[in-house]
Amino acid sequence: MVNYFVNRKRPIVISIIIITLILLVAKITTSKHSGKNLQEVLQNIPNDNILGLSKLVYSENEKQDEFLNKLEKVNRKIFQNQEQLLTKLTKQNEILLQEIKLLKKPPTNASIREKLVYIYPYDPTVKFPAYIWQSWKHGLNDERFEEIYLEGQKQWAWKNPGFVHELFNDDTAHTMIKYLYREVPEIISTYEALPEVILKMDFFRYLILFARGGVYADIDTHPIQPVPNWIPENVSPEEIGMIISIETDSSSANWRTESVRRLQFGQFVIQAKPGHPILREIIATIIEHTKHKQRLLNEDEKLKLVGSSNQKILEISAWTGSASWTDVILKYFNDYLQSAIYQKITWKDFHHLKIPKLVSDILVLPVNSFASEAEISKDGKNDDPLAFVKHYAAKIWKTT
Image 1 (tube, rainbow, N blue to C red):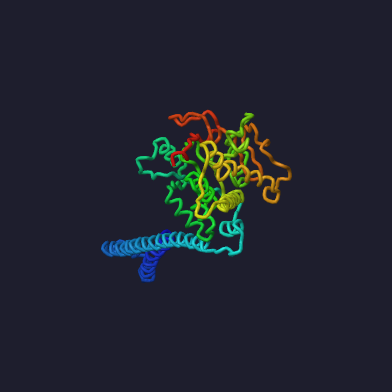
Image 2: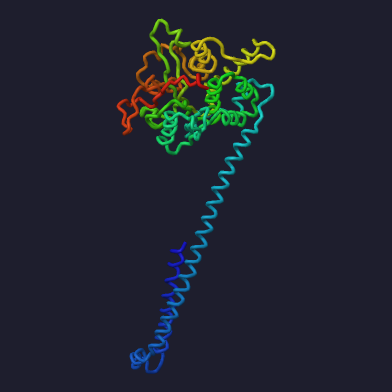
């Protein structure tokens, strides 16, 4: 805008000078001795008059420059204020839309799956949200926060700049669930009924991913590569709704003593888009399984894990952990209305998996992708291009 005024100003100044000279010449040329005296008159024009005219012109020029500079400053300030106001209104609008979404009440007679679809519908076209979620029994400033876990937590944030990274403890996780699922009381009551922290941690990861999407990573994990590196170059992120990896793939004849399923998908690291049907199904399955266990209790009796340590591990896996997670994923693959797959999918399709495999909208990674045995190098270099996360596989539930 300033350039526009400056460009307009210059012709005006020039025009004033030209008109003044024309009038002066016209006066001289119309006199009787115009031809004879023109040179004399021009020579006899007082220098003071010319200087005065010049000063007048330049004075006006300076005044216009000052005016235009002030105008530019005012215009710039107005523009900045408008930008700030627009940014503020955009943020307020996003918060308002989120609040409206949370206030949506599903029909009272709806099933748990219908309620989940209602409050957090799935949109496969959205991008993976840039969130990293973790949970642990201690806060970051607690001296009981183990150094090995603290370093991993720091690395998740450091290797993924631009991601929102949140660590929840038992209290904040409970508060978050009550906030996100205040219109689905079955979820809150189920979470509160789970007898062990490890069960609650499992349930929480599905709940936070279903509502917000992003990456969930157990506290005993250490990132080797940034999250965007997980997707192969020949696969479009738009084709993927979830990224998981194999956790166990046993060839032992005694595999039943070690795990519930011979091949299990891991849930210690998951990336998902919000509202994904697999997350909806695992949440509903845990609620139904918990209610079934509660119906078998005597009056005033509470749920609890029983048996040896190994028996408890297997029960956790079947209740909220990898076995239940695996069953839900295979069920999804074999529901052609959801997966668009018209052939039967079994664990054998992932046995000895060496490279990433896209099945429906699920990218399945080999065991060493999220449970790498690679040592964490100080220079950050890694020889295995498919090693994304190191998992220490600590039996942390024993200390919760």
